[in-house]
Image (tube, rainbow, N blue to C red; front, top):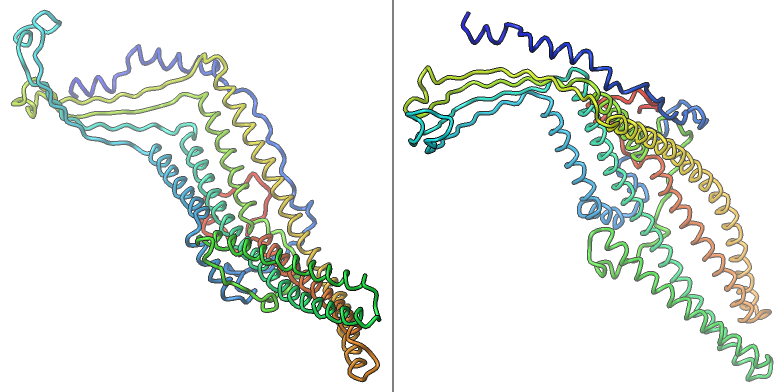
Length: 491
């Protein structure tokens, strides 16, 4: 056995003393007792069934049956800057995860240094080095590895993976939110266009009414106050019509910007509210819904990352073990660099243990534990919001269905009254003023019908968003660590 091997394998008194000191001083950096994590919201408290919730298609908005709206959403999902920023955040977290994963693996590098130097004649080096110029050259391979004795690297990687999954869920949430926002705005534009048509008819009807009243005043059948009132009603109709025109233009601008276009790109868009369709409501709500919503999934992954961060902070109290080695050549003079006598080799195991840090590590651990509890509290709030949002949408859908039935009955009654007044006028036993007054009631009911129908469509979109927008976490669940510390359902 050569001298180098003996030097590397023979334990020295200094090493034994170092190991003994390390073992005896570990108590100086103890992290203390663990603090129990905040409790999560039990799923059973939500009183949901164990059955599966109705599955949604990823392109759920196509069920509304409007091709221009589908095209707008497709454009927005491809070009919207906010959505692009969310996707770039995912890429950034993926890159950071790769960095964390690489740091836990052995690192190997090769280096070459060539230095020409004149050595001082009055320094430490003797002649012939002193007072002369030499080439000091090194060619060397280096390797290092930080051993994961306490699970620090594994916890850091799990935390990075959790943050990456959360970013992916955030991107899905942004896409679902953008699609729902465009759908809602599109429905709002269709409602305004329909209300504008009704307002135009109301303006024509009031103009006709003013003319009839003016003729009756001229004939002495009505007082002049009736004519002034009819003129005021006509002016009011014009104001309402102009206000609708303004809202239509502003809504078109909003839709254009949401879809990544110039504000005036949709200047002629006039969707018809009656062309939009409603889907059937889901029969049941199952606990699997919490695994479909991107916001709940993102909060769950952030809890996982925070739990792993606590583990990382706890490992800081224990010895850090590193091993490094090098092999290569070093010589004064390039002609001797690759000579057998110029070779050098070494191994440098190192153990580092924090002893007295003024409480910094304990404060850091307490901070990570607080961040963990904060993430759990935010998760609990997200779960409650998800349950509320979904149940509210279902309750509103059921109420709006009843409102629609009642309103349709009122509209039919107004239309029948208008038809009877028209028949009486045609039979010579009624007058045009009575017909126009009956038509006013019809227009009022049509406005109400338009509003209720638009609310139904808007609530349908809200329900689709509440049900997760067709997003599933299957790929992430197959490739990422499971969150065993939370009692949440997995899809």
